[in-house]
Length: 213
Image (cartoon, rainbow, N blue to C red; front, top):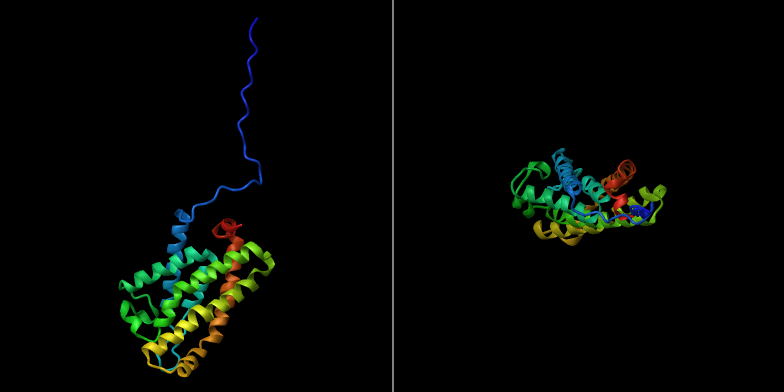
C-alpha cells in the first residue's frame, strides 16, 4: 500500500492593499528627475530677465522653476536639483540670469536670492509632502500656492533684502523698497507653479504622491 503524498504548501502571497515595500529615495528615477529639474532651472535662467531698478537684480523665471521643482520632487530631491544647478553654475557654466557664471555673482545684488534657492526648494518641497499626505486632491492647488507664497517671502525675499544690504550697502528701508517690486510677479509665478505641480502629480503620481502616502 503506497503512502499518500502530502500536498506542497501554496506559496505565500502578500495580501492586496497591504503595506508597500519602502522605495529608495535615490533610485535611478530620482537621480534622473534631479537632473531634469536642474536643467529646467538652468533653462529658466537663460530666458532674458526683465531689468528693474538700478541694482542689477532682474525679474526672471528662476523662482517659478525652483518652486515647481520643490512642489513636484519634494524637499530632499528638490534641494538636490537646485544644488546641482548651483554647482554647475559656480563651476563656470553661464546659466545664471544674464549669462553669468562663477562665484563672482555672489558679490552682486542677486547674492541673497541665490543663497535662498536651495532653502526655498527644500521648504516648499517639505510642505508639498505634507499637503499630499493631508489635503484632498481638490485642494492641493490652494495649499501648494499658500506654501509657495510663504516660502517665497521667508526663503527668497528675506535673504534677497539682506544680500542687497550687504553687497550694495543699502539701508534696510532702501533694500526692502527695492525688493517690493518682485512681489506681484513672484506671487503670480507661485500660483502658476502650484497649478502646474498639481497637473504633474495627477499625471505622474509615482513622482511624489505614492512616495509619501
